[in-house]
Amino acid sequence: KYYKRILNELTSNDKDTHICYHNLGNLAFLKNDYNESIEYHLKSLVISEHLLPNDHPNIADSYNCLGIVYFNIQNYEQALIFYKKALDILKLTLDENYTKVITCLNNISLVYRTEKDYVQALSYHQEILDIEKQYLSEDHMNLGFSYHNIGALLWCIGKCDDAMKNYNLSYEIKTKFLPCNHSSIAMAL
Image (tube, rainbow, N blue to C red):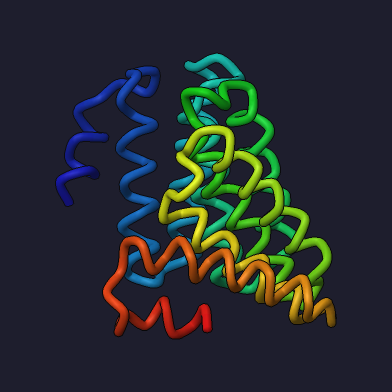
């Protein structure tokens, strides 16, 4: 109600209108009203594209949100289209947005993993690892999770020796930060 009331008070070309629609889209998503979520996110996107430069991170956020909604309704083709559009924008400003790039790459990988296209999923996780190595310390916890994900995908395509190498790297990093009884360490064993 609050966002709808604000929308009534804003003009159609007000710079905050797209934010209200974006937030309404997120609220509809949380209520599992995916059609309404898509509608609001598309409105936000149209306004953002009109008011902002084509490479603005807010436009990428709208694309990513649409990808998430489409993933949840199992329209994987549309999800990939929106995720890849978001990724194209975010990669233009990798230094400022590397965490969002990683999130987007992970979302794309999840689509491919869900479709059992493990080779494609693996290529996106390799890219995640490359970016993490560029921006994070070599023993950063996130690398432990990336090595685990890569190991799981290698296992799925039958490259068991390579999978074990990645699981071992994951284990080495995770044991530096997590208690020995943590479930994430057990998964790396």
